Image (tube, rainbow, N blue to C red; front, side, top):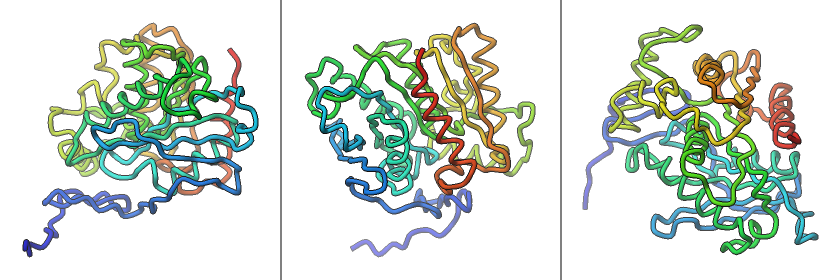
Length: 321
């Protein structure tokens, strides 16, 4: 029997969110418990889990307004959501994401798929992106009404599809939009991409971004832990300014949420400016929450700023072209 005790030596201390130890363990400090799918009594939204990759034992969680079941022909906009967590923590099945998706689906009257993907250190980047693309291809297989899941067959409007995520999940959502632009998902019309406090970075500070050496060193350590094959933060996966195919982004509308006290704030604004400068041809807008930190809408969903955030998200998806 192996009696070796886990190492207590810290590699990265990102309190109050996570600690990475030198033996590769990740301790999530503010994580939420996993919850099963359910019929939520507050929102009347029903959820269920369904596999999308039997090979890797991966599932996603589907959300559907309960009243929709009464009309098998009712089609709803489809949101595919990718959770955050620096590519190494959190889950589509965490209580904070379950609650968030229940509220969003209810307010917007949509169907949603929240994707679970493999994470570092066992499955470093780009595994999360590759799994997410596999999930999207599985979702798209329902566009002809003949996929393996009845909810998607009956209720998903594949001419009104949206990608979204927060933090690392926003990074994934952006790259899924790019992959869709380069290698179109059959039967899918991507109406918009919603990036919530996106995880972008770069080797050198940009205007309005911190030059704190300690923070930048911590982030670089985190990159080496979650993305060992990537040589630096100017890789296109983290720095869109170095993405040669950015103009191929497969959506003509992008909404970016940033927060005043979030150290990633400047990168969100920077991404919007890049899209405008490269001649992408779509419409991008940014909404900034004053006095708030990273992903505040998950931690405090009833605050005034969180309510405004959710309303803007809903309005973006319900906007008619």
